[in-house]
Every structure is written in C-alpha cells, then in structure tokens.
Image (tube, rainbow, N blue to C red; front, side, top):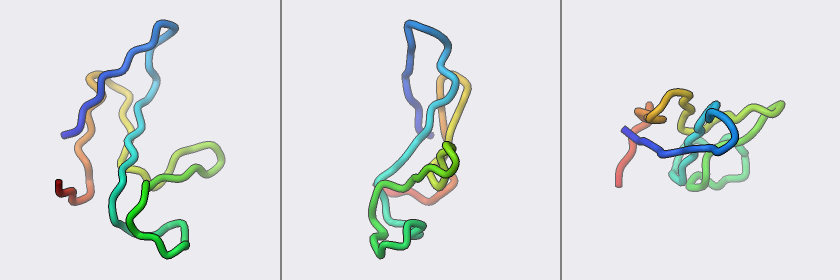
Length: 67
C-alpha cells in the first residue's frame, strides 16, 4: 500500500492523486513506454495509478509493481 501525508492551512484536502514512473501501455502514442503515466482529459486526471479522498490517503495499486 502507498500512503501520503498531506495538509492544507486553508481547507480539507479533497483528493490525492498518485502518478508513477514505470513501464506500461503507451497511451500517449509516442513510443515511450517507461515514463510518468498520467494525462488530463477535460480537466480530469486519467491513466494514473489512482486517487484517494480519505485520510491517511492510502492507495493499493491495481497494477503489478516492483522495486
């Protein structure tokens, strides 16, 4: 599981998005498979590792990861 610590002096954190540098499907179509995987479509993040809205902002990745 991945976790993140986040705080804001102004208001509650609404969402934490996880992006990763790894080899995967090349959604961008540029032939580069190992890169930061995410992009935005109509202002929404897509093809990223995942998002969470609840503290402690944990995410269990749905893709196979290795160190």
